[in-house]
Structure formats: C-alpha cells, structure tokens
Length: 159
Image (cartoon, rainbow, N blue to C red):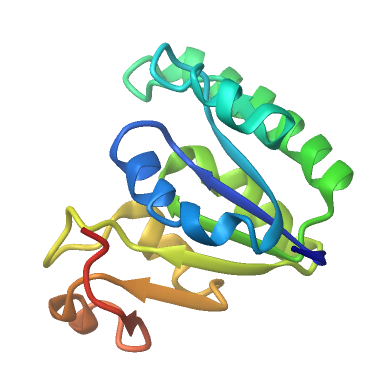
C-alpha cells in the first residue's frame, strides 16, 4: 500500500456506486476511503470496509427545499472528512453527491479523476459537464463522447 497516496473514491448510490466498485481491485494499492450515500443497500458495505467507508445523507433532488439543506449538511461533513483524510486524489463516477467533495478537493490541491458513466453513450451528465474543466484525468467509456469531451481519455467500457 502506498501510504502517502491517500485516495477518496466517491459516488452516489446505485449505478454510479456499481461503476465505482469496479475499481475495487486497485483499492489495496492505496490508503483509500470510500464515500457514498447511506441507504439500505449501502449499509452492508460497513462489514467489508469498516472505517474506510463513510456515508453522507441521501439527497433526492425532487424535494427541492429538503435537498438544499441536505447538500449543505453533506458539504460540511465532506469538508471535515477531507481535512481528516487529506487525500492526494479524488476518484468519482458522479453524481450530485460527489460534487461538493470534488470542489473542496480542487480548492485544496487534490488531483481529480472523473469517470463518465457507462450509461451515457452520446450525452454528457450534468456532473461530467461541470467537472470536465477541473478534472486532472477525465475518463470516457464511449468513443462517441469524444465529441462532447475532446480531451477525454477513452479506456473502453467498465462492464
């Protein structure tokens, strides 16, 4: 394990988390932490990852007022987590849950690796569109997305 290479892997729950967990074989090479939303389906990760898994509040964007407060609370929690861990790199597959940590990380000098979702062949995600200009490595899973992200790195699909 590379002790001086602290990495936070962060994503929303669901498909974004499934794509992030494809990277599991490389976790052991780093002093890593995983961040996702706390749901019934993600609680079980605590058994496998112990103190390396961290949860934020699930934010459902259809409840606008409630969502704003959850984003504020999550941002405060993510700032504290960032200060505690001091990652050199943040790796994310999106979506909205990851945005505050990505912004915090860039402000403090962390490298950002964004992996655009496999689900979008022709259209960019909102998170991808925003983070494209800030990511140190921007990975696309479809060559077709090169029209949207000309500097994206195409490594093929994760699935």
